[in-house]
Length: 104
Image (cartoon, rainbow, N blue to C red; front, top):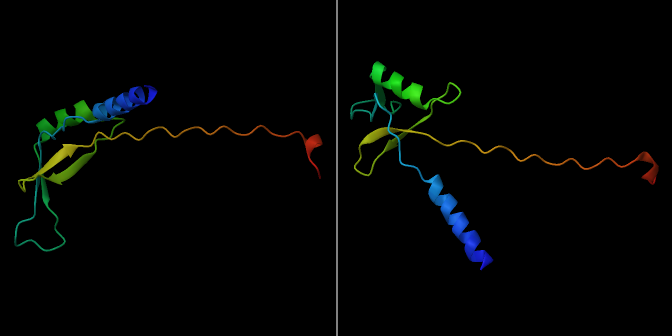
């Protein structure tokens, strides 16, 4: 019974982690044109007013991360990266042993 409860909790947290994608308003990513040199990976167009509102809404600590992706249809798009690193676990420091207990 306990295992079933833990699995339910784990599945619920996995479902909670799945979020609807947020597409960047005012930011257009285009794949390179056929004649472009190999080092050109694409181009970006920004509609300043729309993207400024998007940045204001989603920026965290002055930063906004976007992932440039290509959909199954082959159409490129920019998606808000909502990944937040987990806080590192604090390791407990072992208690210091008194000098009198040292064998040397």
